[in-house]
Image 1 (tube, helix red, strand yellow):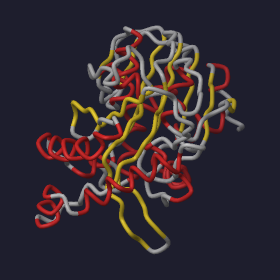
Image 2: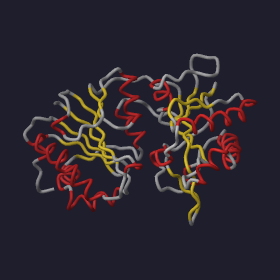
Image 3: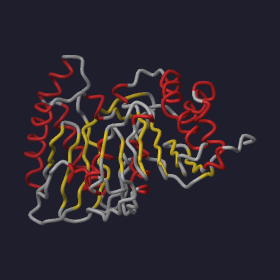
Image 4: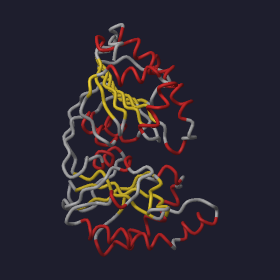
Length: 322
């Protein structure tokens, strides 16, 4: 294998991951200490776009790529439109403000999503706005023109207060006013009343992100391995093979340039960071360091999302003094 781009995204703070890894995953610490620092993005969305040669405009334009992968087409009567992800979320009141609970934590059914979307679209019909979705928690909005709107990727919002990350730009106020109207509709919606009665979180918010027109993609990888839908969508758009993340490095198919994401979905997260890192040390980090020092992999780029990125060659892997 010539190279691998490895993404590590866990629902924990980077400083917690580093502290825990000193005991549970020493090979990960070696990667971070011996590698050469590389420019990096704070979000997974930005990291993915940069890795695939996609330029940032107002947002990192993942929405049109994801819509195409799901077979969702323009709803404004023109071949191209400005796409936004408008994903359903739960907004929770805590001391200090509102925080966002991600779509995966909602366990929203297809029928619940359909009923919510139908009523939102009825409300927005005079505005000519229409949500489309083929998955319960991935919703899309197709706009005929580019709004002046800058958003924050959903993956950056875990445990964050909403206010500093609200959309910015000259159209943000009007757009958020429409979102707020919908959130009032959701407050008393029969779907949410039933969910709250059953002790489940209400769908009481929509989070816009990933806006843009379809960008040009230049294939850089001949294999994508991930459990993240956005990576599957990138593979679909570039026409490259995609597989779920293997449990071990030895199960990864042969390739020249692979993009591999080691993630832990928040919905499956039990909070046991030490156990997860110990498992990754045995199945990925230690074998990768061994393959690199033997020269069987010529270069690895490791992105610890939200913290740092490093590049390593076989020679760098031997820098034991760092």
